[in-house]
Amino acid sequence: MLKDYLPKGMADVVLDTDAYNEIDDLFAIVYLLKSQEKLKTKAIYAAPFLNERSDSPEDGMKKSYQEIKKVLKMINREDVPVFYGASDYLPSEQEGVCSQAVLDLVTRAMNYTPENPLFVVAIGAITNIASALLLKPEIKEKIVVVWLGGHALDHVHNKEFNLYQDIAAARVVFGCGVRLCQLPCLGVVDSFRMSRPEFREWLKGNEISKYLADVSVALMNHRGFDAYASKVIWDVTAVAWLLNEENNFMEAELISSPIPEYNHQWTITKSRHKICYVTKINTNNLMKDMIKKIVH
Image (cartoon, rainbow, N blue to C red; front, side, top):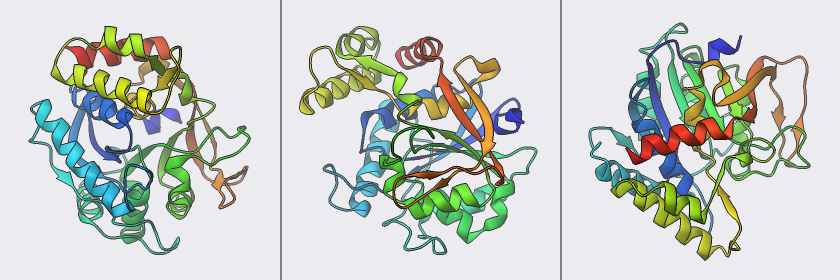
């Protein structure tokens, strides 16, 4: 049942993020930490990434670690522990990459139960979570994983950044039977977006909101977005799943766990264990809640 993938009352949460990669990670961090009415942030993990903003997966992870620390300082939440994640991607589907983040997740998760799980929100390559599941398979009964990754099942291809960086890790997570809620990127989450005028007008409130607006507009300018373009705020939606009472922010269904293939396609199955699959973002409701929390 879908309720098995949602908190029952207050929830303990860890966030796994490649924070230096994209501005939407920073939105997600702030949104999570400003949702204390329901979510308790227990730790944040730095995830590896490799693109034009990093020289290697390890460099991306270390830059993300520093960016997380920077944001926590800006919002006076330096009490939240931050851990270095994997220095590289999985070498195979049988071998994880040990790190501070993996050891913390394994140790922390063992204190939870299937009835009272730890919620693991992942908004980057899912290397750290897969590594923890390989190191200690029994934690799969004690956690719920919420991952923004992959594209919609009916999209023409599945070459999505969080997924294709570490397909082996995704195959571990989709195959092990852990309770998993997937938020597909193109075809679902890409409806949650803001334009330059919206960033500037709606995020005037304080130091962190102005920082998010300035960095977002600067990134759009750097990437050559035209004057009428908008930018997707991808990662906020993964946090919002944990606040999704009565489908106020999104809709979902249970499906047989698909298989992410190395050729950037999904294999659709009918006989595997079920996962939660988000099908629609209720953009207006979520945008209102996000802006209210970030600005105030």
